[in-house]
Amino acid sequence: MEIFIEGNSLDFQLAKEIQKRFPVQIIPSYEEFKWETKSLPELITIGKKRLFLINYKGNFFKPCPGTTHYLCCNYKIFHFGEGCPLDCSYCILQIYLNRPGLKIWANLIERGLPELAKILNFYKKKRQILRIGTGEFADSLALENIINVSQILINFWKEVDPLAILELKTKTSISKSYFSQLKPDPRIIFAWSVNTEKIINEEEKGTAKLSSRLKSAQMAANYGFSVAFHFDPIIFYEYAEEEYPKVLEKILETIPLDKIAWISFGTFRYPKELKDIAEKRFPSTKIYSQEFIEGLDKKRRYFIDVRKRLYYSFQKLLNQAKNIVTFYFCMEGKRMWEEIFNKKITSSLEVANLLDKVALKLCTEK
Ligand code: SF4
Image 1 (cartoon, protein in one colour):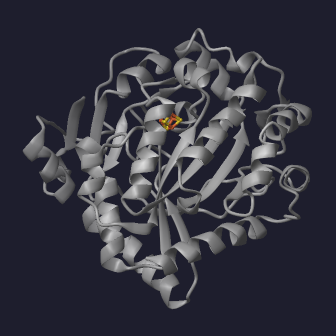
Image 2: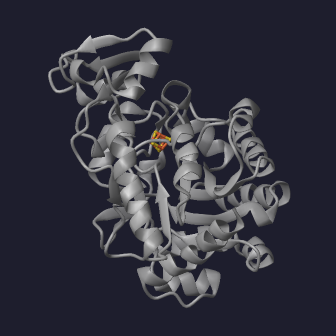
């Protein structure tokens, strides 16, 4: 990994720590960085090995970019950077981020944490629970060995003692030595996006094997943290209906159920511009050659019958665990909630309330 630091960011704490441990190159600014004359798909690939520490001017705290057309969960984001060194063929960041490279906000400790503390204190005073994640524009832990941002946030949670959970979403494996340096806290949720071995092998380049993700989740639970799993994206293929439930079965068999905060489900969906760029970068992928409809949010998604078939394949297991584990959909309508989960959920507020209830329980456990 090549590391570049903007000249005006050298004195920020994060940049100082990195300079102590890694060789770095100083650049005038990310905007002026001279990229090779190559196509955008090629630059995206090159950019996955270049990390930029940037003096960030925007807001660190944001609402999740959900959608107004489907039920979403009213999640909040602590925005620590953009881009991911892993390389999934379905990754939306390939079109969301219009410039290549992995960008981390160098002023995160000096400006991001005070901004976050203010918000956490405001909500705590109102006795209102917050669910915050860091993995919407990046994998929460893929760069952890260089930047330690998740560790900084976990320690910050102990310090500020907020009425809030922090969800760290990843597709990496985490070592025992990482967990052993942290103090247990059920408000910290280590969350794994999971998929079948076939999809992991074919579509999630650079990510950890399913068995390593589950082993890490077991460790997180043993070290006193909460865990969560996201079946997202569920991708349709010939044996999908047999293989996806086996993944859920394995989770339910190997992870203590009382440590699982929630498990979500969402089938593959994408903005139409993604297909072209992803097929150029991943010529052997077949995931875009299914039949799709355009959803209300203008994203392509499987027909309702296909989505239902995929979700129904989990149903036996969902029924077995539904009184212990909270299951939810990411971006589905009320009809799916009723048919698959047998729950009357008619608004995003109700989805949020369902998850807030779990979050509140975790906050009172700590
Ligand atoms: S792990 Fe997540 S952020 Fe990283 S490439 Fe895959 S989908 Fe994108």
